[in-house]
Image 1 (cartoon, helix red, strand yellow):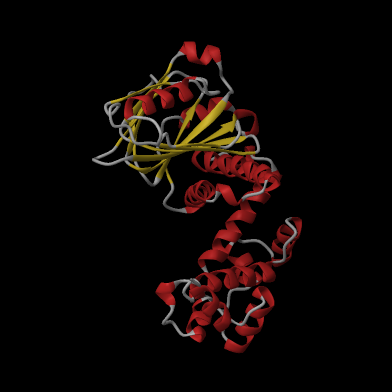
Image 2 (spheres, one colour):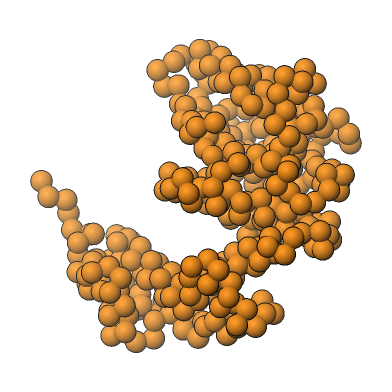
Length: 327
């Protein structure tokens, strides 16, 4: 599967829906679609690869999907399907314990190896859903254990679930910015984080290989740093203490990923500062206050670090990005 971007703007509503339906039937996970809005079917479909992991983001009116045993016999890539509604309500029936309903703020796990009936409904307007397909062979947890979590909404509001949900949504939003080598590595990250979420809910941490633990811990420390960039006392020691590991072990985690803790914290702060300097809504915020917001205690040190990173003083960077475009 290569990247896919379909909007069907050149097609009339019924033709657009039929083209969408054909795409679904001809995919590696064949499903049959139906909709109450065939005549005026507004839609967009974005598909991309992260190594062995496939992803789809769809926006459309209320829609239903059915995958039968005949479809499975025609093609079963043996994948877990992770569904994240961003707008609207999802419904999934695997033929076990009735239909489960779920909305934004949850991930629901399905599988390509079982028949299902699903739908996504909007309360006026459009539905937006992102799905990730993770090969079962990449998940180091027995399938019979994962089966107990199928069609159960898993919250993404806190802890490892929140980290996983943020990762998936960010990958969907920024898929165009990743190089092929980055995508392959990110697919591994998705599989590892998915295993961590499953283990959290199954209380099966021992079933995850040590390398998956390390990658998950690395991502958790990065998330912690991002959320605490405003703290001028944020250091490798505080990050390590928050995760109950030694500072030496934290250093090793970052070295294994070609990074240093101190430089990564600095680079994240400089990146956030650059975004705000280029934001018209922040034009009246004094530069020294902006520096303080992102953990720089000394304006002069901030200016030096910013110039080293971007080749311009903060004031010049702001002027360059907020100046009216030349006629």
